[in-house]
Length: 97
Image 1 (cartoon, rainbow, N blue to C red):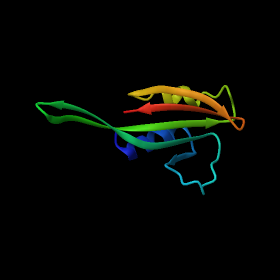
Image 2: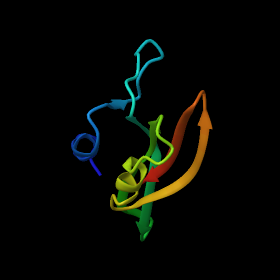
Image 3: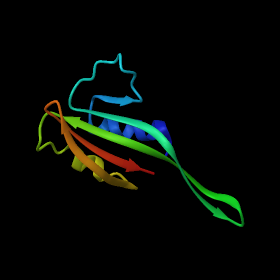
Image 4: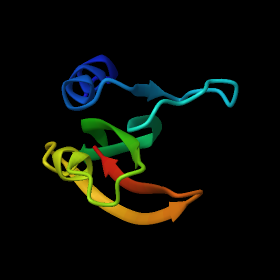
């Protein structure tokens, strides 16, 4: 998926979407942070046949029962990675190809 297409889809789910924000950015919650983490390639006859960027998507919310992670999980080629809490904020991590 193209990064700008992904950004548009994420903005449909949440107003506060950040792409690889620097530490100086003050986040507003709930929010979605996403970053490129690599790519997935399929080969045929030793040539790249299919190429998909891999993104790490983090949903952060103060509400432990937030529906936002469920909405992100519905994105095509999205897979839940892990969930944890830190500083009274709930983080849900997804991998998307």
